[in-house]
Length: 181
Image (cartoon, rainbow, N blue to C red):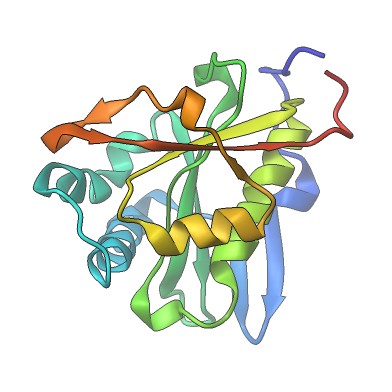
């Protein structure tokens, strides 16, 4: 099955009520700065990131040109966690992905990371992708534990991407055998 690049996000994925006043939904453009701030805080609390990567965390409006910006918001509208998923019309790879998944320090302890992974996998499935491929810096060990817990497997044989400061990114994949392939 070939991934569908012309289908909209299915209605059930547009907004999830997570209980206790938390909602997962697409961020509005006027919320992108707050999303960037939450992601910056998420990555800088307990994880070393390069200056280059740190600056990129705040460029949410620019990233929104080719990615959907998903956030988990509390009832006051404060961003707790976020992830970016490629817009299908701008994603031409064989495998789907998601990027910059982060839970702000003030949003931890609610399972938001797992919720964002599950939501991203559901989006991949809706677009017809069988495999999700992630790349992660070696020092992001909390993220790696989350990926393993969500059924991802490490793929050292695919680890060919070198980024700033010479880091070789780790590769993780998740395959949904229910999607025709």
